[in-house]
Length: 140
Image (cartoon, rainbow, N blue to C red; front, side, top):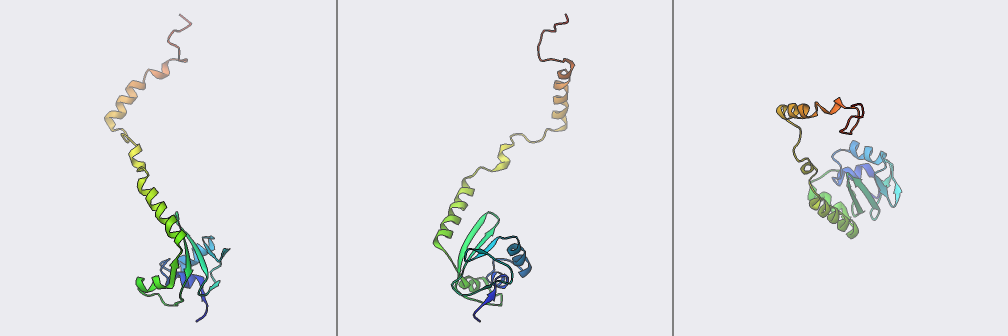
């Protein structure tokens, strides 16, 4: 076997769980072969460079083997070799995500309780009585 469809190779190399998912991602333009946007029927051969964008992770791999069967993960990892630049970029992105603050911690108190909501309403009750922000009423 000299060549294999890219969607079938991505599935057998365990980048995607099904061939349909692989074909959908290819259709969305998230897979490139040798610097060109691929189509699902595009054939890859040993030595081709494949760039895959998945979520916020971008991987660049070199095809080292072809298989039409989906085997165990250790065997699937023999079908490709990730480039050194891709590994470094992926590790840097992972470190940055680890150091980034948790978005949920920005919410200090969360939603008010029923009692807290009533207290806010009571405090806000007198705010709409005046038509201006000045304390002195010029009509007096």
